[in-house]
Image 1 (cartoon, helix red, strand yellow):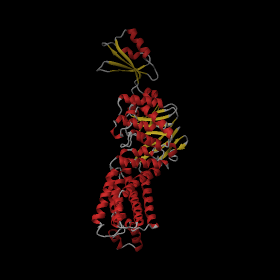
Image 2 (cartoon, chains in turn brown, yellow; image 1 turned 90 degrees about the vertical axis):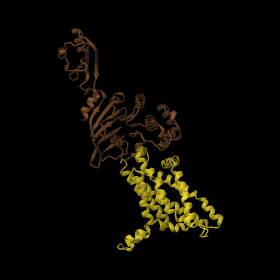
Image 3 (cartoon, chains in turn red, yellow; image 1 turned 45 degrees about the vertical axis):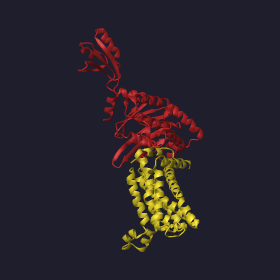
Image 4 (cartoon, chains in turn yellow, orange; image 1 turned 60 degrees about the horizontal axis):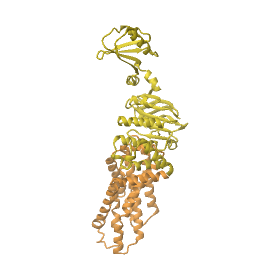
Amino acid sequence: MISVKNLCKSFGNFVAVNDLSFDVNPGDIVGFLGPNGAGKSTTMKMLTGFLTPTSGHVRIDGRRVSKNTTQLQKLIGYLPEGAPAYDEMTVYQFLHFIADVRGMTKKEKMAGLSQVIDQIELHDVLDQPIETLSKGFKRRVGLAQAIIHNPQILILDEPTDGLDPNQKQHVRNLITSLSKDKIVVISTHILEEVSAVCNRVMIIAAGSKRFDGTPLELQQQSRYYQSVTIKFSYAADITGLLEIDGVDDMKVNKHTGEVTLFPAKGQFILGPVTEYIHHYKLPVDRLHVDQGRLDDVFMQITS
Amino acid sequence: MNAIFFIARREFAAFFATPIAYVFIAIFLILSGIFTFFVGDFYERSQADLTPFFNYHPWLYLFLVPAIAMRSWAEERRSGTIELLMTLPVTSVQVTLGKFFAAWLVLLLALLLTFPIWWTVNYLGEPDNGIILAAYTGSWLMAGAFLAISMCMSALTKNQVIAFVLAILVCFLFVVSGSGIVLDAFEKWAAPGVLDTIASFSFLNHFDTMAKGVLALNDILFFMVVIGIWLYAGLLIIEQKKAV
């Protein structure tokens, strides 16, 4: 378990992380969200023991990271931002080196290597120097190095940055499959990633926590959550829509002619709305229910 | 302990994966040859020893050791691998020692590859090989001192060129601290005790006796202490400003 209490980090006068507290339990896949410069990477660097907090502390299994750094780092797999690696080494040499430094025995090393190479599909590039790899492969090598020792805690700083959509999907599946009974913390600024991978979202801005909850709870913050958008075939009398039970507000998009109905908090309006449409035989082309617009929520929370 | 070995092995391999080690060794061999035979008048002296060879080592190291050490930390900083390295379960002490030993081994290799000079002097005359061995040991120790200083300078910056220039500057001060260049500046106002202390930091003075074949304990200790102090300073710098 990771426990963060009143964590602060400043560089000179600049406060990067300001009084951050949270707990992460096994089974949690935490999506760390925030605008650039919000303090995500700095927080992760403190979780992994790379940086020492200015005040406050990080505990893993009850032990302080700043005091038992080396022992606790054994439990962690970490992908730093930008997936740095030793460019002149081949992928195979690099993974070997990481396994050696992590103190894995020969047997563990071989098992770990072959598993990771399979999981991340690195067969084709094993003997290539890392500097010759594409951005996507570099990221995958970084991921491989983070999971080679099958760590209990996985901390990934922007694991899908620079990957194409297929690779993104692949990495997300991988994270999901790795995450059983583990602690996973990933940072990202891709909002869709959070609902795809995580079971918990934490948003920080300007170094402080702004939101901590499930992806669903985040979506529910959106005005568009469970809103119904209707496209009519031709102009129809829509004034009555506002009178439907549970409908709080209505918006008409003048360009597309789409009508959006917003529910009152906690209400589901799809049933009543379709009933109304049937009853008055309104000419509907399309109709869909929104799951909430994360961009809006994100902007609202972080600004 | 194992971690030091693995880090040193990686660093050592990196020297040879990039042409750095080859270039360093080639230039070292060429320059030491030139200094010995053309500047040092090896033949004209008609003496069966390697004094002209060893006398120029401090000056060779002054430029070549900073060149081999400048990337040690600066490159880790620039490429971000320092974050990778420092989040592996190893201490900064282990990393520092690993890096130091790898580079020191390259320097040893370069020294060993000067064996044709040793062979030449043995072919031409009958030198005291004990003296030569002592001088080689002293030279390697001194190279270690240059290396520790240069690594500390490399820890200060992510720019290799700055690391190189700073290292030459500091190394130069240590080389010449026993000579007029430095001592004249202090002579007018400093107490004789201060002058002696400054002079005693001189690499040249300590190496001179070693080059003559005298492995005095205080000279060996001097270089060991210099290595220790500068490695420790580099360590503190890395601990303090990892992220920048």
